[in-house]
Length: 451
Image 1 (cartoon, rainbow, N blue to C red):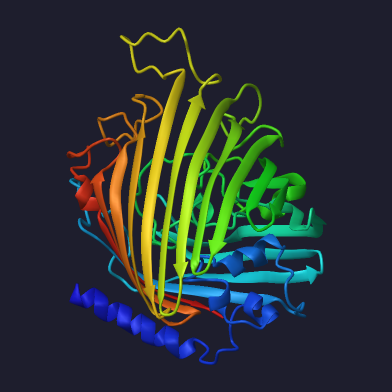
Image 2: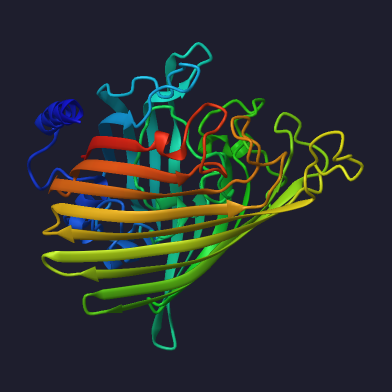
């Protein structure tokens, strides 16, 4: 532990020596509005009420910048409780070694009085692991959110309405209870084993799809949105992360009419802010991404979420929670003639449920602590939920995340994050690799900068 902390301290010193030390050297949105990052964020990327207003108004508040550019970078050290499986294979390459993780460049700001953008391009130094064990880097289009907005008074109340183009369902949302901006906000960048199953709205389509839709924000209380998604190919290829479409590493969906919906009610009073809402998505997915033709399977995600914030000086407290229920209809994959006595048969219908909750405290905008709980449960299916390493054929995962943060400035952070698993891919016991859930517990130390 001491050796890891010493390595992180070295990374922090190097990073802080490169980071800007004056308050005006902040990301492009802050330069545009003339405000510090703390006006929009409690601790990046969590938004304040003003930050939500800025986003829902299409990033148009303030003065347009000639070059609305910003950057972000991260260094880290990753440690797992057990470094090798029962066969002696290393679970995480470059574990315990200081890493330069990633660099993101943002084109983010006002285009005119009725249009704005948030466009992120990311270079990942540890993108994926090759078959020979080596790690390759990769650069890609990352989260993108482009808006055209208008304003009108309705019965003496303000109405903001707009169109939105994005490449990650829920990245356009203004609350941190939805998947794209939900906790944890960062984590190990090294290729490492993670839980095998998640709902499709929870990262399963990020940077692989293009969504276009409309939204309204009425009286700073009621938010509603309806968007439709299709593959990020052809004209929309610029929104893709650049993976080859003929590989099995992407999800191919049918058409451009896969709907995403969102409805939320927000109340702000004094230092308090409360939101309760629902969101969801229905997606038709081709079973074989290399053959995007013919019948599809349907995934329907329906979610409830809530967020509470208390913002004062010097205390900030936030709570977020979400519950996602996914109905999986395998109308293209299910074989009704399958004989269960001759081999494993897939269910015609499955379900997957995810619950997440997180509480954070931030003192003087410098010292933060967060505690989160996650729990995934689902059907017993020997085809869909079979990892190859675990005899249990359920997708269940459960655990906790604890994080300590130090923010010397609003654009810099040092984090110590620990993830503890109590269930892994359906099991509390040893899997085929000779690993218990706790053997995959992960300690992640990072330094993060934006400028």
